[in-house]
Each structure stands twice: as C-alpha cells, then as structure tokens.
Amino acid sequence: MVLTGLIVHFTAAVFLSLHVLHSRRSLYWLPALFLLPLLANLYYLLAVYLPEARFEERVRRLAAATRRPPPKSVRQEQASLDYAEVPSLHNRLRLAETLLADGATSEALRHFDDCLAGPFGDDATVRAAAARASAIIGRPLRVRDRRVAGNRPAGCLAQA
Image 1 (cartoon, rainbow, N blue to C red):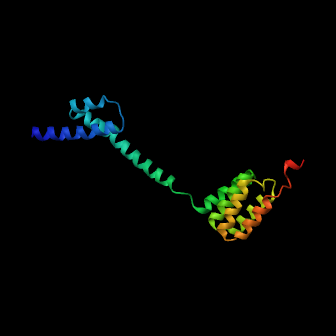
Image 2 (cartoon, rainbow, N blue to C red):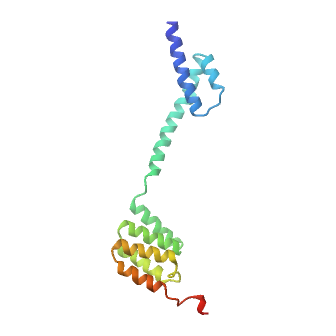
C-alpha cells in the first residue's frame, strides 16, 4: 500500500514538474512537488494546472478563429468603408482589388479606370495593379493600351 502511494506521488510529481518546466513557472515548485507529497501536488493541480488548462483551451479556440480569413462580404465592406472615410488612392486601389477578388469585375475595373484617369495615373503601382486586373479579367489588349497611355509625358516636369 505504501509502495502504491509512493508510485502515485512520484508519477504525479513528475507530471506536474514537467508542466512547471514547460510553462516556465518558478522553480521553487520542483522541490515543493517532490518533498510535500500530497499538499503541494493538490495545490498545484487545483490552483495552477486546471485553470491554466481551461484558459489555454479558450485561447486556442480564439486563435483558431482569428486565423480564419474574414468572409468576402466583410472584406469588401471594410474596404468600401475605408474608402468612404478617407478617399485616398491607397484605399481606392484596395477596394478595387477586393472587388476583383470577390468577383465584381465591372465595378473593380471602374475603380481602376478612375485611378488611371486621376493625377496618379502615371504611377507604376497604379498601372501595375490595373494591368494585373485586366490580365485576370482576360483583356490583355486593355493592358497594352493602358501601358502606352501611361507612358505619355503630358504631365511631366521635364517640359516645364
């Protein structure tokens, strides 16, 4: 009977001491777990291990939920809200790329055309995004037209 008690105590102490080392708790738990057979094991099990196990499960579920990408409608609505708040070129390009990824190609092309017609139409980022969108849609002729139209030096400072 005494041997069975020692085996149970030693097994529980080893299990809980591995948890102490794995969770980087204070090292004073190690001698306490081995030298105080029942008291330290029960206290550590009830006060530290079980609440932490429940907490880790909640954290794992929360982390799994945050790893999933948001649905298309949420991404599209967020991009349109950002563009409505601050109508910048970056937000318009992000909205156009989100619309393109969600399958609203005509609306995405309208936004890309507006970006190309604006003051940043000669910008390489805008032209590359519009060319990528035209290639995805399957209109490579529009890509060539946009590249040729984007290379005109009409607004260039070198003419001033």
